[in-house]
Amino acid sequence: MAKRGGFPGGGGMGNMGAMMKQAQKMQAELAKAQDEIKDMEYEATAGGGMVKVVATGDMAIKSIAIDPEAVDPEDVDMLQDMVLAAVNEALRGMSDVSAQRLNSVTGGMNIPGLM
Image (cartoon, helix red, strand yellow):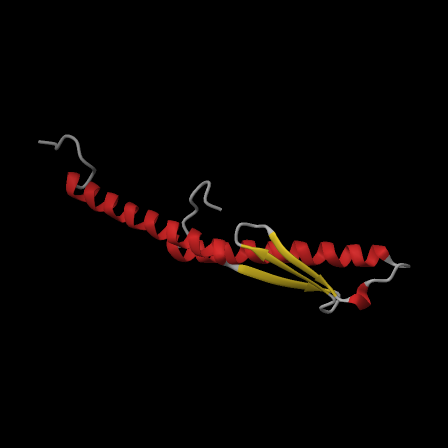
């Protein structure tokens, strides 16, 4: 006689309860990790350190520091390129750090909408 309901292999609601507890635990750990990420910062430089950019965990630029020697009125394009490079690297770095932190909680599972 075949069992009705539950999951294949038996276990029924006991396994479901354990899965729900595990999901709730992961959800709490994810919330904690996301809070930690908000407080993180990532610094990137360009032009040998002439331009420094700090990005925050919520993917905002917190600061940009430009060495006065990088300011050449005859070569504004170079300064713009350095700022752009540093900003992009700061955002890319922060994104990587965030993904690593979240992967440590999810065990590498891809959860839609999380990253």
